[in-house]
Image (cartoon, rainbow, N blue to C red):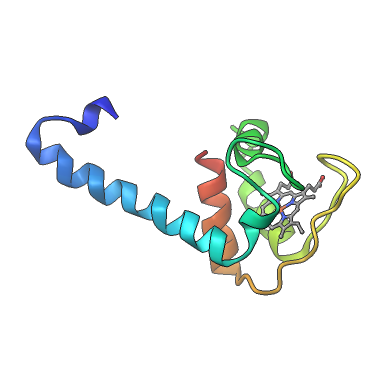
Length: 103
Ligand code: HEC
């Protein structure tokens, strides 16, 4: 956050770049993701920080994870699978995964 303090011109850029992060948390909340996930602790599903760390550097991960978010699946984090999320479109799934990977 230090770079967000000055110079003044950067403040506007920082606010703009922070907005999508809030928007995506709101999207994740509205799509019910946050009832099973938390950003930094395991709930029913893994913490998003752990997911981001696991796939950092894996270029194929975002597409694979977006499909998994829509269709559900298991076998990676424990015995509990993620159910499918038919309320999520492909565009939303990609957006959510990009946000998860940035945690
Ligand atoms: C009913 C609970 C539940 C809901 C709702 C849910 N998840 Fe999950 N999620 C899980 C579980 C359980 C896992 C671990 C699955 C596994 O071990 O492969 C998981 C795994 C994941 C993973 C990592 C998958 C992998 O293969 O490593 C991502 C990314 C993810 N969820 C995103 C989302 C998003 C985005 C939403 C909202 C659209 C969502 N989840 C909604 C329970 C849930």
